[in-house]
Image 1 (cartoon, rainbow, N blue to C red):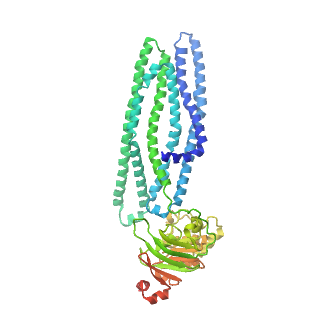
Image 2 (cartoon, one colour):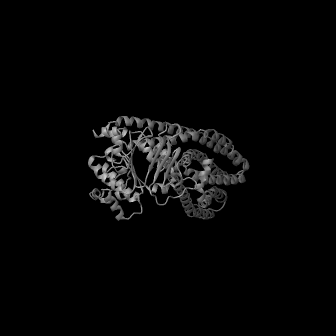
Length: 579
């Protein structure tokens, strides 16, 4: 019920459109209810009475003309607008819901994404959101229209013959019992099927991106078997839902066929003894269809709503995902940043049950300084720099920027002053220009070109087939590693941040590419506070401070010459690499 209340927040802005759709739908469903009455009038008032043939034909043509106007000319626009407004309403609601979900995803921390497969998240936004449209179309529109049709049909039938009407509805209690029993398990089957779809989509999203690995290790057959297992799991859950749906429909449709037989038996008796006219009997039988067709749709609506509610649970579960890194109450923008950074007694771990990744880190970086973080892999270097832009929040201690706790700053203003270059920078499908513009979407063409030149990227970009308009493919697959890195550096130049974070920015490149990128990075780091994570120690000998981190703690600190003279951990690492 809580999920439905949350969902109705998205429906509320369109309540007038829903009401208009219901009004038009009531007209649409009311028109067919006139047809049995037309039929009764034609039989009892025109065809069966002993009147001249010419009069019968004249009256019949008149009635057919009126029926044509009502059932064709009037019904056509009503049918069109009912469908149009129903689809318009649901499409807008799903549009708003997907926008809200995507905006919520932007606010979730990296911890959330580390624990989720991207394909599963996509499945919730696309597949599960699409399933929820039944809540509006069926739950808020069709059910009420079918109830309206059913009620009007019952009133007309009861007015024609109360006892025959009672005969027609004898099976309704069995309907209620069947629905109560059968749909109890349908929700669980629907949720299990949705989860299987999400798992398979998550698997596909991950492994399609890893095709080069599959081919290099000749794992095609193994991958086929793995996917077959996932697909079989989905098939098993889909068939379980299908079997239950089939059982439900079989029972419901069998119950539905009992009513016409009862009406035929008792109605035929009434006609035989003269208590009911043939036209009245035919009209009543026509209303029987108008009674049980909405009833069938109501039963099918229960199926749709059960499946939709299972999808809605998954959607709202994502929408209610806690924002564990968010603006604190009273947070304010930082304005212009000088780049004065201080870590005071910082302790950090990724979750409550894990070991401490960082232990009592104390570090001061003055504006414009370059500080290098070095040490063995897994020591906590990358974790440390991820805390400054608050990709994660610390458990103990304090991180200050220009004298203010970073948690007292708005996330947008904090991150707008930090430029990050990673070892594997993510580029998006689109043109080179569009990827550089991520640094500043409002930048002019001259600024884009200037940023590319300063990143040593302009020359190779101009050699591409369409220059800056060249499409680079998903994750920039059409560019080499060095080219992707230079595009990533160009967008940081365009951003022009006060603080620069370099996380293994050149470790995966060849020497020629590294030389070009090191030139770009030296210019980029000029007059900026710079934090560098590096394994290749020859690239950070110029740093104002070198911090050696081992097992989450600061083992050594100082300049290159000082640490070499001390002969400690840094000197051993440097000598090994130099040899």
